[in-house]
Figure 1 (cartoon, helix red, strand yellow):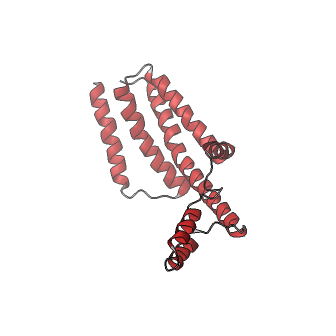
Figure 2 (tube, one colour):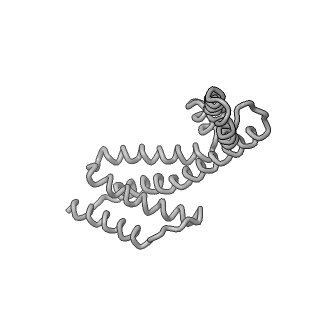
Figure 3 (cartoon, one colour):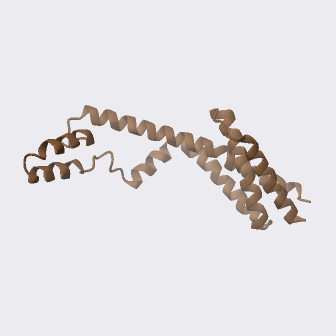
Length: 174
């Protein structure tokens, strides 16, 4: 029989991992959407000498009849990256750290990892990993459905899979 402390550890890890995954996913999608909107507004409002992809295609087709040298110069200037597209890793990291909608769920998710490693100090990984991950899928689906109104295509398969994984793990423990 699994001690109550260990079962609570499995549940805590699964809840921390499973319930934070949808929040991280949606916060990052919203962050990317806001960033692309800001880049679109900036690109539309600034008068840059670098043509957009649509205008560069028109220019390259128009220039085909003229000279090959002009085609090469237009295409090379069109491939020059925009300053917003060339965002450094540190700028991206800074933007994510400043977004509390990403940071708070991520920190809770990492707390789940700490609890998992503490759990591994007393439980074998062959038991802890399948149980925690199976329950994580279940809590991810429940959180996605209740908070973000996402639908699982085959919910009975999710529940059946979770039961089979936990049942198989319980058989291994006997």
